[in-house]
Length: 82
Image (cartoon, rainbow, N blue to C red; front, top):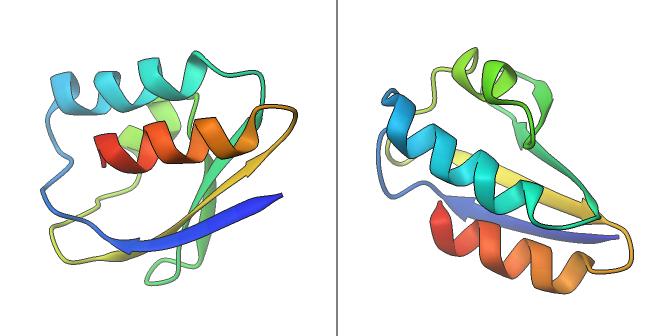
């Protein structure tokens, strides 16, 4: 399991931006989640509906978690999209 905590660099209310993140996470076999402590919620990063349900804003702290055979590559790719 690999975790990385970051501050978001943009707003995540646009479907195009969210779909890019989901598409990137879906390229990997690892399970990928995003934890937002401000809402005390963990969501599946491969689910567009879950990501849309979380009103993430610029500057919010989130933790991305990847678990699986390609976890390091997966977390690097997704964090770069965030």
